[in-house]
Image 1: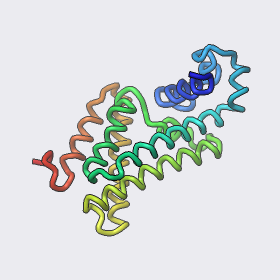
Image 2 (image 1 turned 180 degrees about the vertical axis):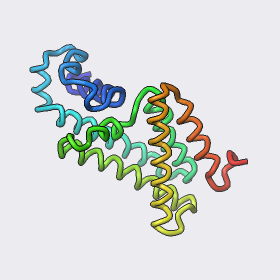
Image 3 (image 1 turned 90 degrees about the vertical axis):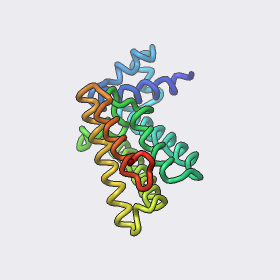
Length: 187
């Protein structure tokens, strides 16, 4: 793994575990095994590093969505929920967007733009899932459903983190799955 990839990987992990204000460029450099001055060869400042982490998260998210295009709405919802439950790690980490929202007003324009792009992509996928699954007879209904899923999943993720337990996320996901129309899980 090249140095820039190591920096990105470590910064992503720190962002999800400690949020944007919970780590320093010095900590990233120490974990990579380079001097802090060498870190500036790759990133001009912390905002540039955070922006790159968010852009990388968005790229990964888009690939996940692209791979699910031919799947049923229910399987796509499962894939979306799996991101929060297993890939992020409910109870131990936050999603990249949550890692920056606590300091939103002090965050630079570039990381804010990438965080909003990632959030908007998530909403777009959920709206599509709602429409495919018959939950959104109108764009407004699909939007409301997507918003409620995001609120519930993000809230569960935060509660899981505070409690250091995956249970709030697991219960929320089980409830969302059981509410899916025609699901065998809602019996």
